[in-house]
Length: 91
Image 1 (cartoon, one colour):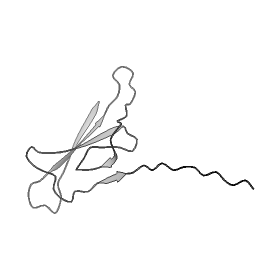
Image 2 (cartoon, rainbow, N blue to C red):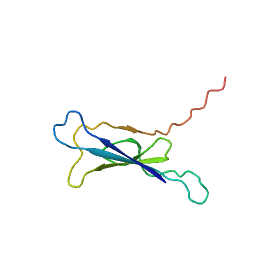
Image 3 (cartoon, rainbow, N blue to C red):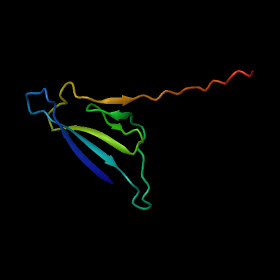
Image 4 (cartoon, one colour):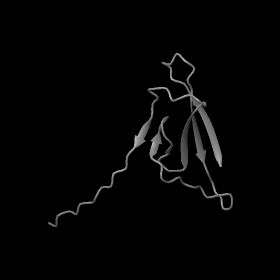
């Protein structure tokens, strides 16, 4: 398991509001295989836990106890859409 904690502060904020991201990657202790996180949306957000596009890194947003996420923190999400393949007309 590896964990990395990153600290962010909005440039427009005059207070000392700070957000953190805990990025977590896990490997099996027995065989060394990389494990994937399931059930979390892909992306990067300061408002909800997300997972990397390859599902190998979970991203957990954090703030100091008693504080809230400053408005306007950036982020992105990936939405997966199931596309049905259309058969080509026979010519």
